[in-house]
Image (cartoon, rainbow, N blue to C red; front, side, top):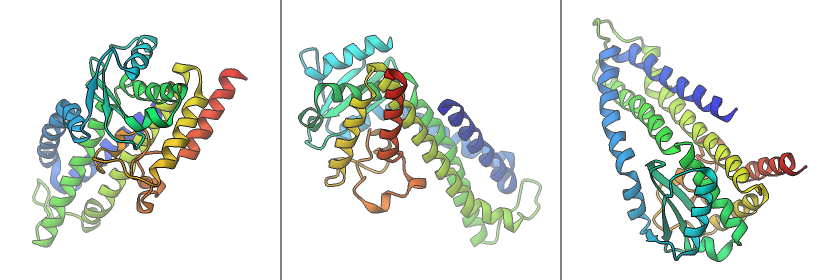
Length: 285
């Protein structure tokens, strides 16, 4: 069901892009914006792993490290290539996965994860991140960001055209003022809402797959509760709004302005825990 929802939302995002492009700039304008957005997001997709890992000052660890052996076991269970494993030098507990595909993936966890969580809970967190790799969520988020970028670019162009009295389609006809307002105001908001909704859907999928992978959804539920509680008191060093969606818990959870459900990259931790508890009942009766 979550996969179907993701496809539906991505299709809706593409439809919004085509509608506002046709209403304002015509097919030619949409194609130009699409090419620009593709270039920007291709760079982000291809180099995002190294950029993000450097931002968080992550340090790669090898076979002698505790986390490496857990990831190695999970990769074998999920029949995935072994990703690189990184430790982030901060006592704030969190984790994320990155990389353009399963063969070029990395899993990173903070030192705080190892201090706060027990082994079963750590396995749950890392299984969640391995699920993101399995379902190619980095690719999906890049595609979604591409559509959203096009919509945002067209909205900005429409705004400047309105200021300077422009706004004609490719046939030379004046742009419908209602369509212009929709392009400038409504479309970018709708695109953002859809982008966040897709992100939340992928988090639910990773929770479920991670719980199934270790056959212990409650371990992941306990880990989420602990990490979420800590995030309300301290922001993870190096965290930015552009990378917050990658973390298992939003590192800005403690900032009240970021807790609006519609504009959140993560579902509420309470809802995630409730779903994991339901999954545990399904698996174990």
